[in-house]
Length: 286
Image (cartoon, rainbow, N blue to C red):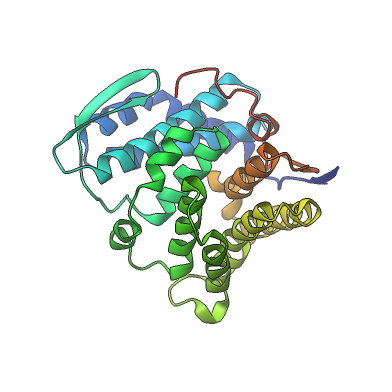
């Protein structure tokens, strides 16, 4: 078993951040019901709370960590449910332990590819097939219209995951197109550092998962975690970001591999143990 240590981060900042967001969770509840951009705000806040909690709970053993993750997933699902239905049509979804009804928003600036990917990764970790099915139906062009400044590889990566969810054709060709699109000469808008250290590794992991290459998958997972650490420690401010605490995309790919029966011989606080193993899946209604 190989181990990748998590970087040092501002633990008091993470603890206070989680408490601050949790104390204002009613704001997220009100926003998600009434504000056009409320689901996007709730996704960001709930994800940050989840990540901050993982700072002090690296194995994600505590119930509040799981509940924060599920709220983030619920918000992401609400974002794309409301964003893909005709504006004004009533939609229904869960947030926390409540069922909320509100008018659909139609597409917004928040129904973009990065939020789609974040929600998909959360759904994979939570083993939530209904929300994955919802995400599989989001038109790529809608994601592109929400944020056309992103490079093509990101949309190919979304398309590959949608094909995987639907058992669609041309999966491998689409994954390979996404991988080629991360080459520096193919990038028009993205910062190469972030693409090569954060965005390419999960695409490679997914490809190795589709090929059931156990040994190469674990090698690539170690590299992905080391690159995650390198990116988030490149300057003094980055380690304060909640996004640094959990390697969400590699975690999701490791969950896919493990659930397919592949051996994942890598341990890291970047991959909270109880999320990787699905300990709490099915405990509550999401």
